[in-house]
Length: 175
Ligand code: SF4
Picture 1 (spheres, rainbow, N blue to C red):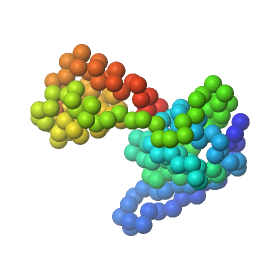
Picture 2 (cartoon, rainbow, N blue to C red):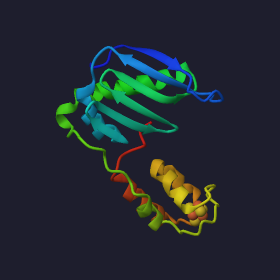
Picture 3 (cartoon, protein in one colour):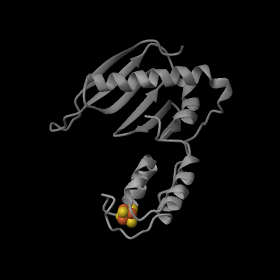
Picture 4 (cartoon, rainbow, N blue to C red):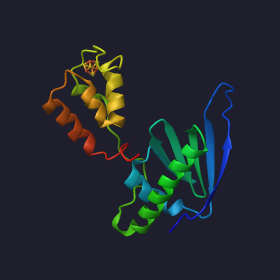
């Protein structure tokens, strides 16, 4: 096992009206070596080698893993931070244990291109999906393929083509 314990610290963001917290967890071990493997298994949003860091885009928040710390930019309370950290601890340890079968990625993993998704949408900007334009819908669908059900103008084969496109990226679906 790679991470066994961590110590959490919370702070308020500079904006006095913000209701959320920021959290940093200080780890009992250095996880730098697992970051390129996590970049593969979790689909990194940003990856840097010097110093090593990997940023993940989770629903509603960005999480950055450093060698000896994990920073979460938005949490509503300690319980939510604990949920995210325990999930990450499990993923870090599981990925580390399986590292010999995983090909590490030393760059940012490829992501869906919004224009490629837009091309597959009706492009009427009718707003019936709840988004103001098809481009916004493309952005939200790239993060959550379940959103495709919200466009009444997409038939099953249209949804299938977009799902097939998104599936090659394997990201944004684990948490
Ligand atoms: S309902 Fe479909 S066509 Fe209308 S704006 Fe949303 S994605 Fe575009």
